[in-house]
Image (cartoon, rainbow over all chains, first blue to last red; front, side):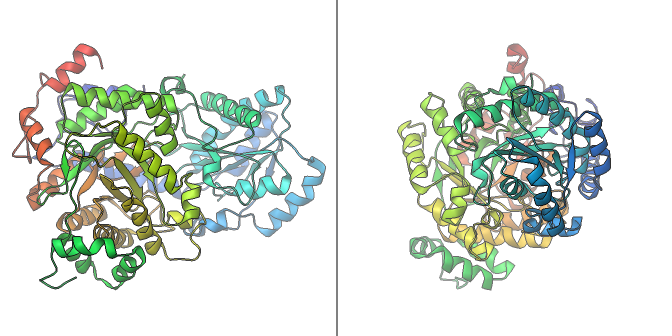
Length: 262
Length: 363
């Protein structure tokens, strides 16, 4: 059961007779019509939601806040920067979001010797929705790290890398000699979901990896896949990936739809 | 192509002789009106449980996505779409999770709805082709097999596919013999920028690679092909003007290669575009004879996080251009008292069969 779309007008206000079905979905169903066309109220609701989503894309990422939250919960962090520089550049140059900037790369390599090779590197980025990383990343990472460490996994400090794309994990993982990488980043905001977090994991990350070799868990937010459930799902996928020595389409998710929200 | 004498039969005869590189190159020399005029001359008709692409017809893919694939949530959007007269191209779900059991659950839901109401349409769950094949092997009712395709071998490898895998999928779907009026069993999606996005473009421009993706699709006699034109984002198509141009190019190029082209008229929230741009492209594609468009509740896809076209949009387009649904589906809408004459929606009350059943069965 998902939260009702706050912009959806109440039943009876010109909506269709099946508006009760809205309790099963936040989709814009039973909107009603004038002739065959959308009603003005629905049109204005849509435009307001679009304006909010545009604001969410452009919002700045509170890196310090996320660092504080993770450190308070006993998870160390390490800041990184991509070659993208600023948000306008990031939006039109995906290649620059897939690589570290020179200074970050040097500092990462300098630190890598002391860390040694480890099982997992976790990277967090704002991606296209800073709110997603700010609100949900720590809630996924803390239980995930706890569970994996209890099973003997060694984990690098959590890397916080604003303005990153999914593939940045390959460079980070390869330079560190990480067996797995897991990247959490804000998905592009939908009209009703300005804070949806996506997670992408890769076995033996490296420049030659393609998206077909990653597994994705998407829509991490209270109205979609809640953080605790996402942490369990990611732990399961990471453990299976380590056991089988693969990630991506060769690693099939065997959960059914009903299990996801539990 | 602009000559009066160049008509649908001439272009249909030409199509098998065209390479994608030829078609892409010509499209770049064409104005928007050339792209519309030439596409309008092409006719590509395909069939499975209904007939798509006939003159004067516009079909709609009903896209009832849900962020957690909740079957009741999906069913609610299906009922909404059907009561708005949409779903003749396909009822096609993008699953949030690419898992075999989840896909199988959704396939069985779609099969139940289509059989219970005897709807002359087809279903599809747009998971990875290997997931659909695994579900099919477990006995799931697969009508159409879907796959995203791209225009280079490297980009297709990044999608986890090869041509022989697509061939194998087509053979498996054909063997089920689920079509009633035709045997086009494949559904492909494309979109400019996918090769570059996978760093698999070899320095080639995105329109040439897009049309090469159509050449991949052409080999498998699809029921449906659509370009998801504004889906990837502003790094490939920056604003409304570029999305409109790309939509017209893609539609025309696909039609010239003999494909049953639809267009997902869409944009993301990080692009410089809005719903007015979509109204413009939708109208132009209607004029150009586009086979089908998407129907998403309120144009807001709550799973994929982008804006497309709505059920209402299809009624706008059908009214202004005098277009009707696929003939078999039009007859079903009449029989179910959902629409008259294929265009005019009828009042529906809570006793309508599609709604009464939900109450009794609690979905």
